[in-house]
Length: 631
Image 1 (cartoon, rainbow, N blue to C red):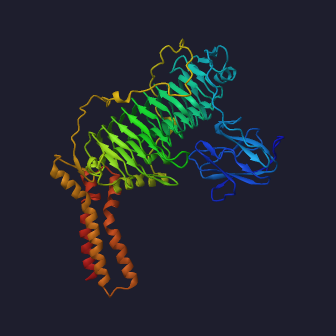
Image 2: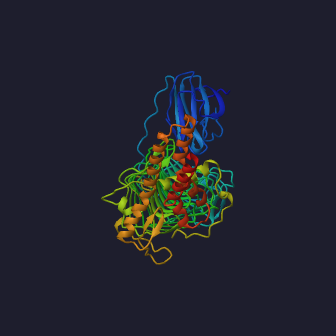
Image 3: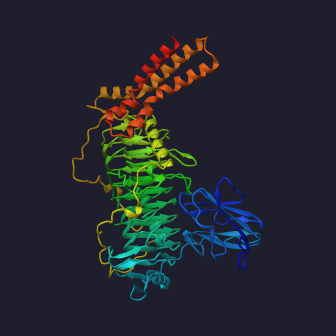
């Protein structure tokens, strides 16, 4: 137990990391990457609980150093006893800084006054500032940042800078003179490469960040940000990352070797953000946008050789759920089946999918080329966190999708209304004939249960920690990346705080050429993922019939068997219960076999038979077994 030394307050601190089941009110929840509430109010003598319900480690650290929780892993808590009235500022060492920057807050104890509301950001300086050179004027980047004034340009010469840079001064431009030779290196010990906290208008460009425990380039709580010509690789969380930030842009950048996503914008509504001309590879996920909503465009970029490509999603571990309103247009998404990429349990479930909406709403997925994925090309799925988030109102149109192992287009059940598919060029779909059963303007059906079961199977693998992945520390070093034109002579270019720096004419965006191959794909009807050719009215009729046949057989089997069971007077109660259990479960052997055998490289036709028409075989086998047992 420690006692604080400040005049504002004194504390008794119990530094314990215990399961969340041991909770004492009031409590503060540490999410990714914010405290909720950030300004808790408590009486003198209260035991305040800080519970980490996020996916990442956090700390609860006093600005004056009087207490520190140490690392709080997800699912653990920290307890703090408040002895005297006062205002007690605190922060997370990994995602915030003393002084209320980033992931931070203030405890109001007893009669302490409320914290002042957040103010609008200061306007940018009217004229460009000075140019500060590193190492010419200051030996380190952090020293130059600390000496800078709003509007200054910090120009960094080639070298390896083994430091973690924190920026709290607004409207700075931090720029390297050589993207591939100005390298920030965390040595697998430092938290973040460049961490911008609550500083509006900060631009970071033309440099590389590698080997940090958390993120390469990271903005938090910012209005107005831009990352251009950046390279981030082999960092322990994200590559280029903006959280709780609006009016931003990421462009001409590269990210690889991250166990979460290469590029990320999260917890903003509306985000007013643009991601364009970026390349992500060898990450768990190329793009992730958790609870990122409204005026957010991802366009003109390549997402390849990750475990999964583009994943807008809803989670309870961040505020502003559900996710909605991302526009994903004109991207080339291919070959995202990389089992050697680093990954966390929470990212593996999207493996082998090019573009997946997980629990999101009202997203537009248009004119993308999505190719060569082991599971699905484009998938609209529910997402399970503390709540079940169901996707709805998503529009998938004008995409070229081909070479998917299970289905090019898919929609898992349960699905909310309004998801629609039209004018896509594709080969296979689940549910079959997806543009008929989930067309834009008229729909006659919902999602496909087998798609969601397949997703649950990968979630189970992740929970059991039984899934393939590589080590983020040893991923391949990327080749040299294109330089920013005129980096050594261009004037400072602070980001704008009231609009995105660049606007895209979405109407002019076309499907990318990709590798230049034949863009045409035959439109085919599928029965549980198995394509039928040629695509005619009759194959459509057969496809719909094949889709409903297992349900008809299951209902018939249960009805007949239950009728026979009811009229039998020679069965005891226990035998009746046993037979009822068998009646209900025997037909599920097919889907279970689908999952088990689906992990091996068997023929797609066999896989489809097991989950679809093959169900009839199991019904027949069960009927024979019933006849023998009851004779």
